[in-house]
Amino acid sequence: MSAPPGVASSAVRRLAEGIGEWPDLPGRVATFCAIELRRIANDPWEILMRVIQPVLWLLLFGETLNRLRVFPTPDGISYLTYMAPGIIAQSAVFVAIFYGVMLVWERDAGLLAKMLATPTPRTAIVAGKAFAAALRGLVQATVILALSALLGVGIVWNPLTILAAAFFLVLGASFFSCLSMVLAGLVRQRERMMGIGQAISLPLFFASNALYPISVMPKALQYVSYGNPMSYEVDALRGLLVGTPANLPLDLAVLVGSLAVMVSAAAALLVRLVR
Image 1: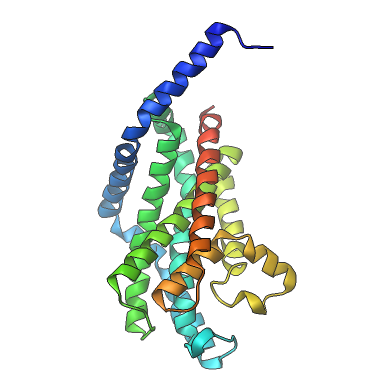
Image 2: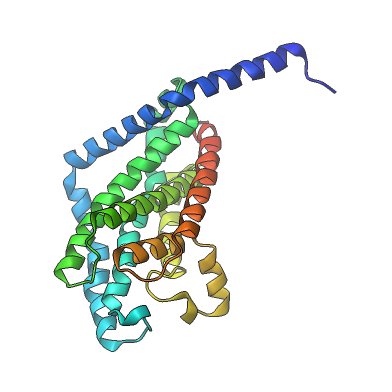
């Protein structure tokens, strides 16, 4: 049964209007990123407080296991060098995974409803917030990278590889911030979001190759790790920053594909969050 002509023409008109808005998408995403940078500049202490945990991981856990030589590392690199890219990824992911709490706060303050009332596409709102969260994580990762240099971690200090690593870090953090926004659209409460963020952040971290090679994991955990986007983010960071073997095309494909799916899911749930 065909749709009535009025309904069909309305759908075509909305589609054409949506396509017409896409050229403005980068500018709108950049606006959200600029707002987030302003927040960071106004409250630098939050970055310093959040960076304490990954610093402790690197200084205590990393230094201890580096001396014990518990895990095998490729190409004979030190365990501290092997672990550093995983901690850099962790520092950004742990920020991003709680970003849904901010989205719920904006809903409660009435800001989200105002955003949805503008002509800005919902995907632009989600993408802007995701990349803003990634920028916040990138600032923290820079601190961890500087600390790694002070500890003598064998980082490849090539400007191109550093920029490529930053790109992969942004992709990974954006994915996890979108995952947090999806969860916010489902649970719709700040208290529950805090609990869920704490419940899934460490399992995501441990079920990846951030601390140890996938080959030493139990078989069941290996399958989980292969389905965890964080494993591909860490693989790319490790290959770029310390020069270990990495499958960068696969890492890029998984992160970009996962991010696209999660942006679409988060955009679809924005209206539900406001209701």
